[in-house]
Amino acid sequence: MNPQPSTERSARRALVTGASGGIGSAIALRLGATGHHVVCHAGASLGRAQAVADAIVAAGGSAQAVAFDVTDAGAAAIACEAMLRDGPIQILVNNAGMHDDAVFPGMSAAQWARVIDVNLNGFFNVTQPLTMPMLRTRWGRIISLSSIAAVMGNRGQVNYAAAKSALHGATRSLALELASRGVTVNCVAPGIITSAMSEAVFDKAAIDRMVPMKRAGRADEVAALVAFLASDDAAYISGQVISINGAMA
Image (tube, helix red, strand yellow):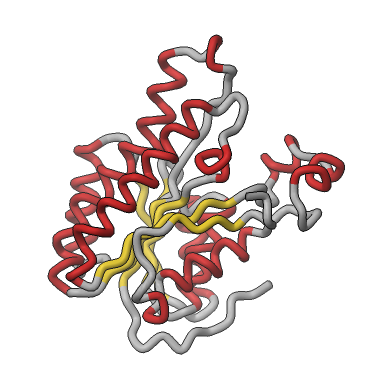
Protein backbone atom coordinates (compact mmCIF):
# COMPACT_ATOMS: atom_id res chain seq x y z
CA MET A 1 0.00 0.00 0.00
CA ASN A 2 1.53 3.28 -1.11
CA PRO A 3 1.16 6.28 1.19
CA GLN A 4 -1.22 8.88 -0.21
CA PRO A 5 -0.17 12.50 -0.65
CA SER A 6 -1.31 14.72 2.19
CA THR A 7 -3.06 18.07 2.31
CA GLU A 8 -0.79 19.12 5.20
CA ARG A 9 -0.68 22.93 5.25
CA SER A 10 3.08 23.24 5.55
CA ALA A 11 6.10 21.01 5.24
CA ARG A 12 8.16 20.53 8.35
CA ARG A 13 11.41 18.85 9.26
CA ALA A 14 11.00 15.40 10.79
CA LEU A 15 13.44 12.99 12.41
CA VAL A 16 12.63 9.28 12.51
CA THR A 17 15.04 7.27 14.64
CA GLY A 18 15.49 3.65 13.69
CA ALA A 19 14.29 4.48 10.17
CA SER A 20 16.22 1.57 8.68
CA GLY A 21 13.85 -1.02 10.22
CA GLY A 22 10.46 -2.17 8.98
CA ILE A 23 8.20 0.13 11.01
CA GLY A 24 10.70 3.00 11.00
CA SER A 25 11.13 2.96 7.23
CA ALA A 26 7.35 2.84 6.72
CA ILE A 27 6.96 5.89 8.99
CA ALA A 28 9.74 7.77 7.20
CA LEU A 29 8.23 7.01 3.79
CA ARG A 30 4.79 8.11 4.95
CA LEU A 31 6.07 11.40 6.37
CA GLY A 32 8.05 11.98 3.18
CA ALA A 33 4.89 11.42 1.14
CA THR A 34 3.09 14.09 3.19
CA GLY A 35 5.68 16.64 2.10
CA HIS A 36 7.93 16.82 5.13
CA HIS A 37 11.72 16.79 4.94
CA VAL A 38 12.63 13.53 6.69
CA VAL A 39 15.90 12.84 8.48
CA CYS A 40 16.24 9.05 8.38
CA HIS A 41 18.31 7.71 11.27
CA ALA A 42 20.10 4.40 11.70
CA GLY A 43 22.09 3.25 14.68
CA ALA A 44 25.18 2.13 12.80
CA SER A 45 24.45 1.45 9.14
CA LEU A 46 24.30 4.76 7.30
CA GLY A 47 23.76 2.80 4.09
CA ARG A 48 20.41 1.42 5.24
CA ALA A 49 19.20 4.85 6.34
CA GLN A 50 20.42 6.31 3.05
CA ALA A 51 18.41 3.72 1.12
CA VAL A 52 15.23 4.89 2.87
CA ALA A 53 16.12 8.54 2.21
CA ASP A 54 16.81 7.72 -1.45
CA ALA A 55 13.40 6.05 -1.74
CA ILE A 56 11.71 9.18 -0.37
CA VAL A 57 13.59 11.38 -2.83
CA ALA A 58 12.82 9.01 -5.72
CA ALA A 59 9.13 9.37 -4.89
CA GLY A 60 9.42 13.15 -5.13
CA GLY A 61 10.09 13.94 -1.48
CA SER A 62 12.95 15.44 0.50
CA ALA A 63 15.15 13.45 2.88
CA GLN A 64 18.62 12.87 4.26
CA ALA A 65 20.28 10.11 6.27
CA VAL A 66 22.20 10.17 9.55
CA ALA A 67 23.76 7.47 11.72
CA PHE A 68 24.58 7.69 15.41
CA ASP A 69 24.16 5.61 18.57
CA VAL A 70 21.15 6.89 20.53
CA THR A 71 22.66 5.46 23.72
CA ASP A 72 25.75 7.68 23.37
CA ALA A 73 24.65 11.02 24.84
CA GLY A 74 27.64 12.87 23.38
CA ALA A 75 27.18 11.46 19.89
CA ALA A 76 23.44 12.19 19.99
CA ALA A 77 24.06 15.77 21.10
CA ILE A 78 26.53 16.34 18.27
CA ALA A 79 24.15 14.83 15.71
CA CYS A 80 21.21 16.89 16.96
CA GLU A 81 23.29 20.06 16.89
CA ALA A 82 24.21 19.37 13.27
CA MET A 83 20.55 18.79 12.33
CA LEU A 84 19.48 22.00 14.03
CA ARG A 85 21.82 24.07 11.86
CA ASP A 86 19.29 23.60 9.08
CA GLY A 87 16.34 24.53 11.28
CA PRO A 88 14.30 23.02 14.10
CA ILE A 89 13.00 19.48 14.06
CA GLN A 90 9.26 19.88 14.55
CA ILE A 91 8.26 16.22 14.17
CA LEU A 92 10.24 13.71 16.21
CA VAL A 93 9.46 10.01 16.00
CA ASN A 94 11.35 8.01 18.63
CA ASN A 95 11.27 4.63 16.93
CA ALA A 96 14.76 3.28 17.65
CA GLY A 97 14.52 0.30 19.95
CA MET A 98 15.65 -3.23 20.66
CA HIS A 99 14.81 -6.22 22.78
CA ASP A 100 16.95 -8.95 24.30
CA ASP A 101 14.59 -11.52 25.75
CA ALA A 102 15.10 -13.90 28.66
CA VAL A 103 13.00 -15.12 31.55
CA PHE A 104 13.70 -12.83 34.47
CA PRO A 105 15.53 -15.32 36.74
CA GLY A 106 17.97 -15.96 33.90
CA MET A 107 18.27 -12.37 32.66
CA SER A 108 21.76 -10.91 32.83
CA ALA A 109 22.54 -7.41 34.05
CA ALA A 110 23.87 -6.64 30.57
CA GLN A 111 20.57 -7.66 28.97
CA TRP A 112 18.66 -5.44 31.37
CA ALA A 113 20.96 -2.44 30.95
CA ARG A 114 21.21 -2.55 27.16
CA VAL A 115 17.45 -2.72 26.61
CA ILE A 116 16.83 0.12 29.07
CA ASP A 117 19.65 2.12 27.48
CA VAL A 118 18.37 1.91 23.90
CA ASN A 119 14.64 2.20 24.54
CA LEU A 120 14.56 4.69 27.40
CA ASN A 121 17.87 6.56 27.60
CA GLY A 122 17.82 6.83 23.82
CA PHE A 123 14.51 8.70 24.11
CA PHE A 124 16.13 11.23 26.45
CA ASN A 125 19.35 11.60 24.48
CA VAL A 126 17.52 12.51 21.28
CA THR A 127 14.41 14.30 22.56
CA GLN A 128 15.98 16.59 25.14
CA PRO A 129 18.31 18.56 22.81
CA LEU A 130 15.56 18.98 20.20
CA THR A 131 12.81 20.16 22.55
CA MET A 132 13.72 23.81 23.12
CA PRO A 133 14.18 24.64 19.42
CA MET A 134 10.82 22.93 18.78
CA LEU A 135 9.16 24.98 21.52
CA ARG A 136 10.39 28.22 19.98
CA THR A 137 8.32 27.45 16.87
CA ARG A 138 5.20 26.94 18.99
CA TRP A 139 4.36 23.81 17.00
CA GLY A 140 5.67 20.31 17.44
CA ARG A 141 4.95 16.61 17.57
CA ILE A 142 6.86 14.09 19.69
CA ILE A 143 5.75 10.52 19.04
CA SER A 144 7.41 7.51 20.67
CA LEU A 145 6.93 3.90 19.64
CA SER A 146 6.05 1.66 22.57
CA SER A 147 4.73 -1.91 22.48
CA ILE A 148 1.85 -4.09 23.56
CA ALA A 149 4.39 -5.61 25.98
CA ALA A 150 4.17 -2.38 27.98
CA VAL A 151 0.37 -2.46 28.00
CA MET A 152 -0.28 -6.15 28.69
CA GLY A 153 3.09 -7.53 29.76
CA ASN A 154 4.88 -10.39 28.02
CA ARG A 155 6.83 -13.35 29.30
CA GLY A 156 10.56 -13.04 28.77
CA GLN A 157 10.39 -9.28 28.24
CA VAL A 158 10.54 -7.76 31.71
CA ASN A 159 13.35 -5.46 30.59
CA TYR A 160 11.60 -4.43 27.37
CA ALA A 161 8.23 -3.92 29.06
CA ALA A 162 9.88 -1.87 31.81
CA ALA A 163 11.60 0.41 29.31
CA LYS A 164 8.51 0.91 27.16
CA SER A 165 6.26 1.43 30.20
CA ALA A 166 8.64 4.15 31.35
CA LEU A 167 8.07 5.87 28.01
CA HIS A 168 4.37 5.99 28.84
CA GLY A 169 5.05 7.94 32.03
CA ALA A 170 7.57 10.20 30.32
CA THR A 171 5.09 10.87 27.52
CA ARG A 172 2.28 11.86 29.85
CA SER A 173 4.52 14.12 31.96
CA LEU A 174 6.22 15.77 28.99
CA ALA A 175 2.84 16.38 27.38
CA LEU A 176 1.83 18.42 30.43
CA GLU A 177 5.02 20.46 30.27
CA LEU A 178 4.71 21.31 26.58
CA ALA A 179 0.94 21.58 26.08
CA SER A 180 0.74 25.36 26.29
CA ARG A 181 3.36 25.77 23.56
CA GLY A 182 1.58 23.89 20.79
CA VAL A 183 3.65 20.71 21.14
CA THR A 184 1.89 17.36 21.52
CA VAL A 185 3.52 14.25 22.97
CA ASN A 186 2.10 10.77 22.39
CA CYS A 187 2.98 7.06 22.36
CA VAL A 188 1.95 4.48 19.80
CA ALA A 189 1.90 0.89 21.09
CA PRO A 190 1.81 -1.67 18.26
CA GLY A 191 0.82 -5.29 18.75
CA ILE A 192 2.01 -8.06 16.44
CA ILE A 193 3.20 -6.38 13.25
CA THR A 194 4.28 -8.35 10.20
CA SER A 195 8.08 -8.57 9.96
CA ALA A 196 10.75 -11.20 9.51
CA MET A 197 11.13 -11.30 13.30
CA SER A 198 7.41 -11.68 14.05
CA GLU A 199 6.97 -14.37 11.41
CA ALA A 200 9.69 -16.40 13.10
CA VAL A 201 7.92 -16.14 16.48
CA PHE A 202 4.19 -16.11 15.65
CA ASP A 203 2.74 -18.64 13.23
CA LYS A 204 -0.77 -18.34 11.80
CA ALA A 205 -2.28 -20.48 14.56
CA ALA A 206 -0.70 -18.29 17.27
CA ILE A 207 -1.94 -15.11 15.61
CA ASP A 208 -5.45 -16.53 15.26
CA ARG A 209 -5.41 -17.42 18.96
CA MET A 210 -3.98 -14.11 20.22
CA VAL A 211 -5.42 -11.48 17.89
CA PRO A 212 -9.20 -11.03 17.64
CA MET A 213 -8.83 -9.71 14.08
CA LYS A 214 -7.04 -12.96 13.17
CA ARG A 215 -4.13 -11.27 11.43
CA ALA A 216 -0.93 -9.40 12.14
CA GLY A 217 -0.84 -5.67 11.57
CA ARG A 218 1.19 -4.02 8.83
CA ALA A 219 3.95 -1.47 9.15
CA ASP A 220 2.08 0.91 6.86
CA GLU A 221 -0.90 0.82 9.25
CA VAL A 222 1.36 1.91 12.11
CA ALA A 223 2.85 4.57 9.86
CA ALA A 224 -0.61 5.92 9.02
CA LEU A 225 -1.38 6.37 12.72
CA VAL A 226 1.95 8.08 13.37
CA ALA A 227 1.43 10.38 10.37
CA PHE A 228 -2.00 11.37 11.70
CA LEU A 229 -0.55 12.17 15.13
CA ALA A 230 2.12 14.25 13.37
CA SER A 231 -0.49 16.27 11.47
CA ASP A 232 -2.32 19.50 12.22
CA ASP A 233 -5.52 17.48 12.59
CA ALA A 234 -4.16 15.86 15.79
CA ALA A 235 -3.52 19.15 17.59
CA TYR A 236 -5.80 18.28 20.54
CA ILE A 237 -4.42 14.77 21.14
CA SER A 238 -1.60 14.71 23.67
CA GLY A 239 -0.37 12.64 26.59
CA GLN A 240 -1.93 9.49 25.13
CA VAL A 241 -0.78 5.89 24.67
CA ILE A 242 -2.61 4.67 21.57
CA SER A 243 -2.64 0.94 20.91
CA ILE A 244 -2.77 -0.50 17.40
CA ASN A 245 -3.15 -4.23 17.90
CA GLY A 246 -6.24 -5.71 16.27
CA ALA A 247 -8.32 -5.55 19.49
CA MET A 248 -5.83 -7.50 21.62
CA ALA A 249 -6.39 -5.15 24.54
